[in-house]
Image (cartoon, rainbow, N blue to C red):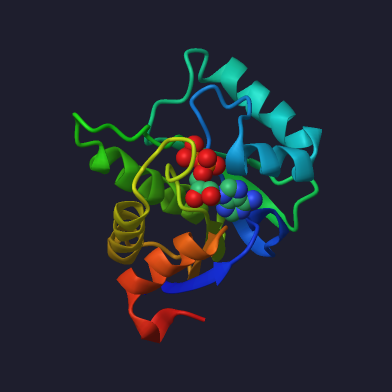
Amino acid sequence: MVRITLVRGDITTEHADAVVNAANSSLLGGGGVDGAIHRRGGPEILEACRALRASHYGKGLPTGKAVATTAGRLPARWVIHPVGPVWSRDEDRSALLASCYRESLRVADELGARTVAFPAISTGIYGWPMDDGARIALTTVRETPSSVEEARFVLFDERAYQAFAEQIGPSETG
Ligand code: ADP
């Protein structure tokens, strides 16, 4: 079973086999984690995203799907780019958010990644309420079979860290 750990910090400095982005369907970068990953990882990541777009995703990568690229200069081997859903008051998009975590684990398995660092997908610019985003992240990662040994949630601020810590209980934090 995958070991879940929580840390507070900046995902672009995490040493892990794979770092997960919170991408958008253009795959061409954006704000938040996406911007930080491209800034620190360097232009190789964007080049790889562009190539994937040109070869497979001319109309954009669908929400809930994920692809992998090099991690460029990040201290990781790969970046996995899932496209998170924008939160909606009128429509329940939870299945798409869960799909981001499931797809990321599937891609991690394909790559042979054993340690995977995740941000709280969709809880920034895309507006997902943090508590609910944390619940979906943790339950989905727990329930998805994979060869990943450690899923490390890297929470950018205290509010995010607390939301995850409350959902997970005291035993798995650290
Ligand atoms: P989305 O568009 O999917 O909401 P964001 O990048 O705006 O993506 O935000 C997702 C989450 O990542 C938010 O909780 C935000 O605070 C957090 N975040 C932003 N920058 C970083 C970073 N460098 N490392 C880890 N988490 C980050």
